[in-house]
Amino acid sequence: MKKIELVDCVKFVGKEIDVYGWVESKRDHKKIVFLDLRDRSGIVQVVCDEKAKNISPEDVIHIKGIVKKRPQHLINKKIKTGEIEIEAKEIKILSRSNPIPIPIDTDGYEIKEDLRLKYRYIDIRRKRMIKNLRLRFEAMMFIRNYLHQKGFIEVETPILTKTTPEGARDFLVPSRLQKGKFYALPQSPQQYKQLLMVGGIEKYFQITRCFRDEDPRKDRVYGEFTQLDMEMSFVTQNDIINLTEGLITELVKNIFPNKHFTQTPWPKITHKEAVKKYHSDKPDLRKNKNDKDELAFAWIIDFPLFVEQNEEDFFYGSGRAKFAPSHHMFTAPHPDDIPLLSKNPMKVRGLQHDLVLNGFEVAGGSIRIHQGEIQEKVFDLIGFSKKQKQEFNHMLEAFTYGVPPHGGIASGIDRLLMALLGEKSVREVVAFPASSGGRTAVMDAPSEATKEQLDELGIKVVK
Image 1 (cartoon, rainbow, N blue to C red):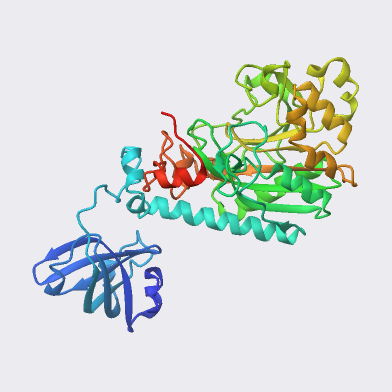
Image 2 (cartoon, rainbow, N blue to C red; image 1 turned 45 degrees about the vertical axis):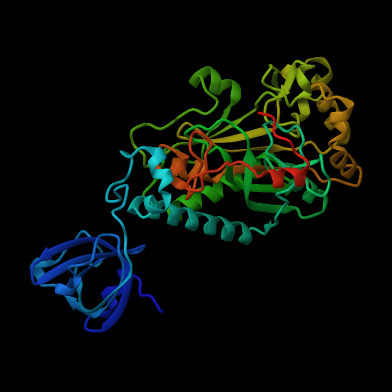
């Protein structure tokens, strides 16, 4: 079965071809029936006889027919196949469809989200969703090719890893072979990518899945998300900024050519200035905030290394210190401010860099700490106990074997695409996202485990 994409039917005028797809609509004119046949590439009109009367919308069919030019006055300029139609010779119904529970001939914004997610496999059929997922794929292919040309290596890091206090709640996975012990799903590949720098990789990237048990928002899917992760050795903060700006600029020009930048090169704004002038560390700098094709990128730099710790910072020293990392505990202090670590930590600037787009943080990174003594000092300031420090012994030991200065940045693919496309929620650029209540689309997860499964893992559920 060699399928011809419907948009390519225009190349076969006068020839007999086989086409496959879903019935978008049917117009019955007694002896003649017109079908709009749809696949992922587009729509083509099919002219049928009475044999098509028993066909219903969303049936999957096979048509054998001849491609003919339409009369001049019947050309449909709204679609790419509008100059031709297919005269059906044979029709075969491959699969019948019940009446679909949600309409797909609109953008879908008017439909309740829980209904769209329940029937996501139908929701994806709508033109806007197919376009979004196609652009997502094209964007990731462009990223991979661009970084390959820059000498980067994509390295996969483990999904089953160790639970460490890094900044958000972990998803825990019980171990069957070592009862009472747990893996954690990675919040990010942070420690692994730094260890890759110790290993001499020098230019690493990964398009990876990350997992955080955080409350959902419109710009964040609950549970898991996709991240472009990059780490480099022997670089400055400006090197990282320039690489990222070049990558995303070329990405926009090639994949989203209808978009335009408010300003180039992108402005650099200190954290202090952003908060004072815009009352936000992720300001929306568009000249016309109603123009979704306007892209206002900006870099936010010179963040404070620490913020005051509060009771929500349960993962940082259990509230025994008044400092929490502004970014994360591996961010390097500004070289000029290192003496302040012992005198006035709240005055220390971190070598952190965030990228904002139209009011959303779309990437964040930093130059990392590569000296063991400074890393231990930061652990002390955020109140780590001796036991908590031991959870990072693998990092501290690795740093004793020759570690290059290094840094990196991570960009949330879902959020970046949401902002680039002008969508209102990241769930519009993800195939099967979790609902705002944390339930997985279509699969109805999380679900209960059987008693046998729990017994094998040595787990008892207390309700």
